[in-house]
Image (cartoon, rainbow, N blue to C red):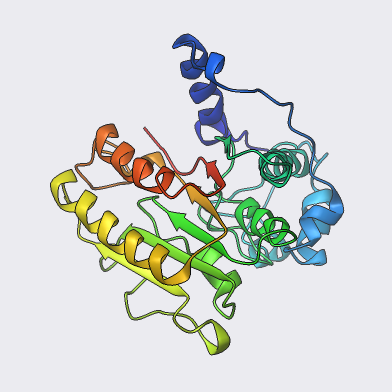
Length: 281
């Protein structure tokens, strides 16, 4: 049985950095709750969730079964130790941030969240659960229109797929897009379906994009979306793999470039949930 390793520990690294820079003095720290079975089933299929529960206490898996392959639990998402406990912690921490917004906070941050590739019935792209979709569903209990912004270098396919027929959730993904690059989706021509047509926005870019190109690109697209959609709340996936040097990325962005994007979102003065995301360096 594999450990989650660096991918699972990256939120701990962020936490250590935040503490070392004494940034918690500017925050109210809340203890995250554990996600419940009901929370997981608000998006994921019962068969998939039951599979995660069943393997939670397995000490060793000698081979990848047909069932594991069916649920995407192989290759980039191999079965890991205490997998159900892990996904419950991910979902619970994001829902704790969402609850803070529902209770009146203007900004809530969960750097343990942002697992945007997971589908309803399978894991994908290192993501065993889609806490973002589950969080958006809960935000919709209070807010009519939710804007989702994805800054990860990879297309936010799992979130887009979940809401591609909805006119109440607008998904906007900025991502590297080229032949052979994971997940292979996210063309600018993909704009949603049915009632949700026009509520999916894909803003692809080429490898080696610089901050001088990306920042005005983001500002232009995000401003146009905000003005047209007039969201009540925003949820932002802040994948660190968009920055220069990431082994699975390909851009030349630096932290200051990403901060300029965040500053624009903050200027809207609407409630915002900030989540983590991919980062592999």
